[in-house]
View 1 (cartoon, each protein chain N blue to C red):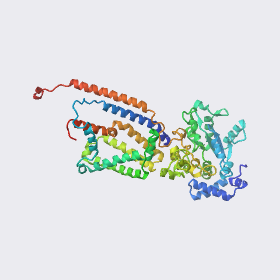
View 2 (cartoon, one colour; view 1 turned 45 degrees about the vertical axis):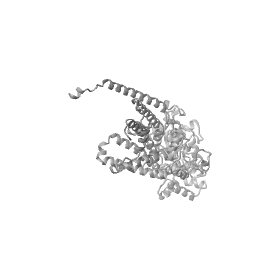
View 3 (tube, helix red, strand yellow; view 1 turned 30 degrees about the vertical axis):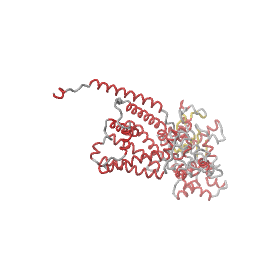
View 4 (cartoon, one colour; view 1 turned 180 degrees about the vertical axis):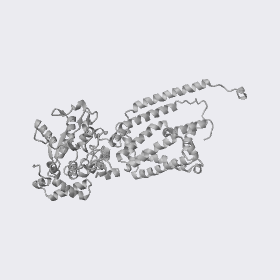
Length: 361
Length: 219
């Protein structure tokens, strides 16, 4: 694609009508809770947008985030926006390999210094000076610091880049950390999820292209428009929760009737994401709709949050210290009892009978 | 520490510590009380052995004569908040689920609307009881730090539980974690404060009645 070609030109070439594009902008604007006028602004800005340079660095990751984005329903506006950006470095998707790809990275960073968007997926290994994960002989830590220097903004894509994710799971052998633990001086958007929802990343990119700023973020650096509410609050099975109708196993009557999966360990009540609203696979369904509870993948340290199949109301392993505590308790009681008896006996021994002469004194 | 880490901690490590300290303290206190030592009973029983003890348990569970006039707030408030606590703790479905997951026993719960109503009444009654304690000069004079602590430790789990269920004030995750944390504080303090009456109540009434009976005091 020509660098001067705009998104609208590209869409027309791909056979997508302007009407479809405008509809997309309107739905994206409403999804992100922007005022109606923003849809027009977004359409104008996006239509004129010229291939922003995007550098995508994969660190300790499974390529699931790339799969999620590239398999976003095609042909779609999301897909086209994705085509539209100048993805100057993405190991999975780029044709170049070896020294050529590293050259492409260096060139993109130099040419667009201060302007490119840096997308990172995967956590950053810090153990052994970052030696656990290297690309072209350089540690992820080193690469991230270099690439972040010239970035206008950083998108930490997926729970690994946003919060450390699975590599950071206990006992975290590689010393994995989130991007925001390393880079402190650049705007960072955390698009958490394992993997994250495709429309969330295009939504953030569209916002950035339209307004030149990042969308409003929550306390964990996630765009509020998509992470503002819990899965539970938006879940279509919520009425069953309120009525106290729960599936007890994955194949019982309740499960077949589509009752609430809370007791089967659903983490919906404590998970902030847009799955229940935007859904997956061209809005086909989301995990709870296919009968499995939410595992809370868009929350920090979801891997260590006490078991996927344990209900939120039940503790992980509460009787851990009870045996030892009981032994110490009995011992303490016995010790105090011995002390009590000793003082009682001492009092008895020290007791003197009162005689008549004492009273008459 | 973020919300989910907080919740994970209170459900995991925090609860382990709290339950450990609860069991430790409870056994300590019970062993200590049991081994305090009673004198050997050399006299023959006057009537039926232990009858006076059982009678005292029943009699002291009824409101004392003239209490209604003397202290109406204690008269009604005492019963209402104790019954309310009993109902909300033992008949709220998620609590039964918790016991079931730990011990494998369960029983039918009450509808959540009933629990909601009982909770509101209990919260209001507890506030009234506290107000009466502060307002009444005699009660205020007799109150110690321990009394206020016991009140707070009982009130907080009920309040945070209600706010969590109703999604009020704070996000559900945080409120649920605060609820569990408040229960943990209650568990830790229970053996070492006057709250230990939840287990010693009937034993001590029985003992008082029994010993009085043996000494010929009609009860």
